[in-house]
Length: 443
Image (cartoon, helix red, strand yellow):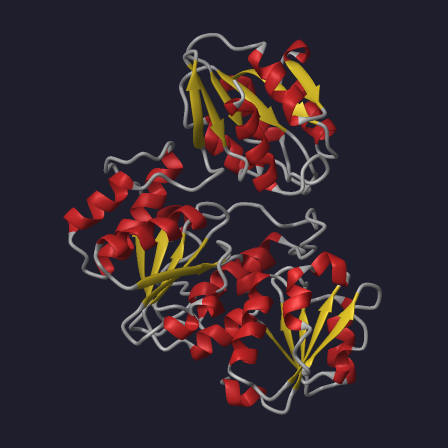
């Protein structure tokens, strides 16, 4: 698809998130002759500046608030935000009523329009943001012209106009962005895979996968359309599911394990992320000294096992991005010191039994944030033999940090790695992490 295909079309933008907003601006600046309608559950006030900036255009219309997802069959194209489920009743009804309707996404159109083939896509249950950012850092260190976008929070349409045939693009890709993909990047990276997104925990992003198999298939779309000249960089832990005998696409499969190169990143999982980035650098024939320099100076991403402070011989780590039991287990295994753990929160339907056993082995005290998942986590902790007297419930970040401080002695670790979504007490994992850091920095 190209921009000319959009001319004289009635186009609905399903959700005015980062990607659709950037797409709409891109089209308007290039005077695409289409009628655009923004379909979003928020009202004008909630959309704020976005509404004010776009409302001046005579070919932009609005379908907001109640009924925002109705009568979609009257459009020629639907550009879906990642949070808008493909299987939602409104989309199914539109497809039934209008057999010619096209359901696509901003990222799919970006892949069609992108002038460079030097696209590196990164997915995985966890580690995709860190790995994407590290690859970007390595390419910058190698003096390449490189841009980063996707699930990391930067819309590719914000930089599409700057790209040339020799540019490099690094895309962090979520399963919701990949689930209806129709092309694959030249280099695809799969960091790891575990149970995630199997329940609609996020009120602002109700999309989810009905089964683990559907979730895995969405992830594998990153390589499904590769050609023999492409590369699929895969964690060797996934070798049983992906192999030359059971190919996803036609790309050459290269496995990575762990890197022992010096870095500022904590934990064995980050050794895998570094190894993935190193493998990409090898494919691109980047000087190993350049790679080593970039790895050594890379500090990691915010809210991913981020060292907030070291005070009175106590280290405080913000791992608010850890919203699954598997990611919190990884965080726990990153330390040998005694841990006071802040965990719990919104329910994503996860199983906490394995996590509870790991907490029993590695944690001296647990503070649980009040939330729908917390009673289940507490039950599993007690079933694993964790002392009930060493569990406290907190109804705010200030209370949680205060309770943690009451348990600390020199050389302890205070780790916020919740294994749960943030919703309820907090808007999102970023707010939760920032509030944690705010409380620590008050000391």
